[in-house]
Image (cartoon, rainbow, N blue to C red; front, side, top):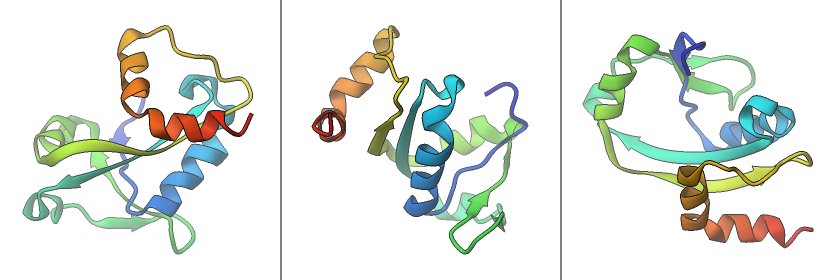
Length: 117
């Protein structure tokens, strides 16, 4: 995101779920949706970043300067996985074709959400 000076991957699923549900579901910029993702990064490369604690015991994240994001991405090992999805009350299906394809690919999580309504 061009307005964000750092990329801050969080270090555990509980913190990621908190962000997805407490911040994103009421945020228009997030499309009133939250996605929990997981990915692996080359251990040697990632060791150059200090784990920062920004609150409670689960609030651990890395601070990757935006200008280093391309290099960071090149050290991702394997696929980025969507592990959970959440949708706020104002959520509307995206018009963006790439997002539609991603959501269809991860339909098992979306089906769990739709079953709640």
